[in-house]
Length: 130
Image (cartoon, rainbow, N blue to C red; front, side):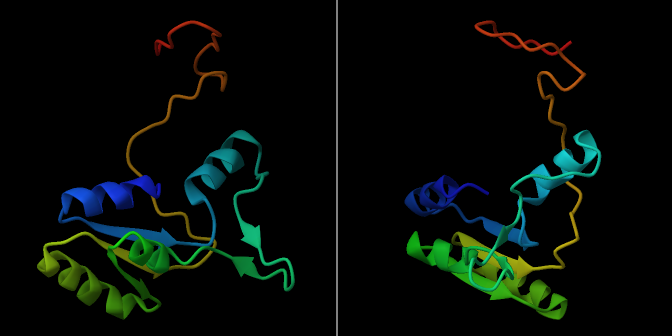
């Protein structure tokens, strides 16, 4: 999720519920890196400089800073109710759902990345998938 979606949802009062599967990493990129780089990964998770423990922004607080209701969920048993309340509000809501750091929930769609063996990179040319 990009922070700009929060401002857009607030400005137009879009009744959307964003559920962030918070695994303390940029998991979608980490999964791609592990696949393309033989299990290696680069700057997809962050550590607190003083403790070396996993660090992550507080996405519920980020939502509140944009004028949107934000809530953190730490137990799977509480997620259903948080989603139900978010839908019932009829307003934009962010649910920051903390999950295991090794989980990488399945996504949808595909990324065609130029230069990754599936296509040819071109500088100054429009990219056309093959």
